[in-house]
Image 1 (cartoon, helix red, strand yellow):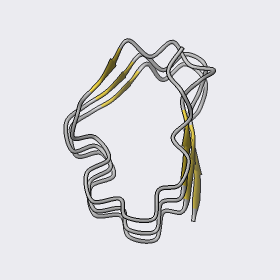
Image 2 (cartoon, helix red, strand yellow):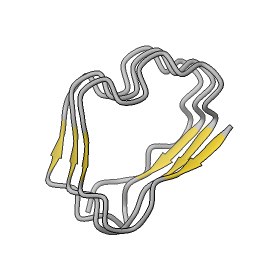
Image 3 (spheres, helix red, strand yellow):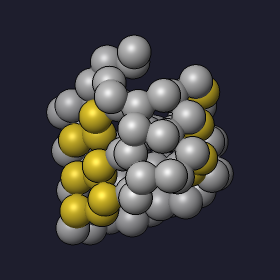
Image 4 (cartoon, one colour):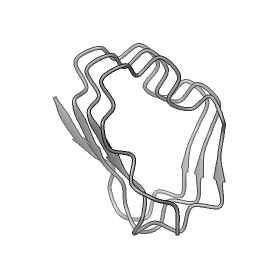
Amino acid sequence: MTVDIPEGVKDIYEGAFYHCTSLTTISFPTTLEMIGKVAFNYCKSLQSAILSHTKIQFLDAGAFYQCKNLETVGKLP
């Protein structure tokens, strides 16, 4: 499953996609500023999460915990 977060979204809150095991790819908007605690924990099929084009200011250290297939996170700006 691919999820495209729409433009205008600034925050992805704690646990938003927690244990969403069918999530493979997530596309973030340029407006994204914050990804909270455990937002993507245990998304075991997640392979790609590119942040380089966003306005990210805060990325919780545990946001992608146990995303064992995550190959690409992209670099922070």
